[in-house]
Length: 79
Image (cartoon, rainbow, N blue to C red; front, side, top):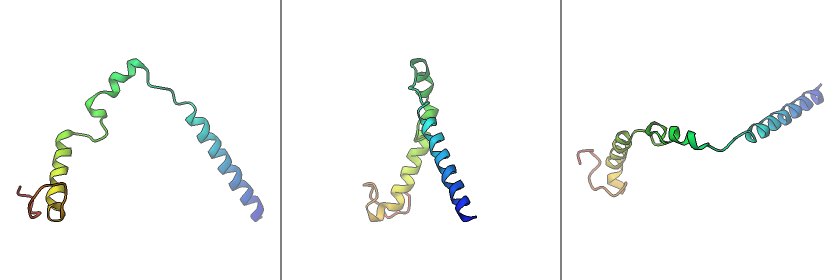
């Protein structure tokens, strides 16, 4: 009984590996007419620029007492 379960698990793992390998081979390069869509601001990995600056300010004000990102202060966020 245990041997058949192990055999099924191995076969399932092999099938998943084969499906994953064939799925990766279907990736095609980005065509020239598709690059305009990828260049839109909403496709950026870091998101909104204002939100990024806000998050960096919060990080710097919290970590200022221990060095942070080069901003002086006591960590109160009032810089």
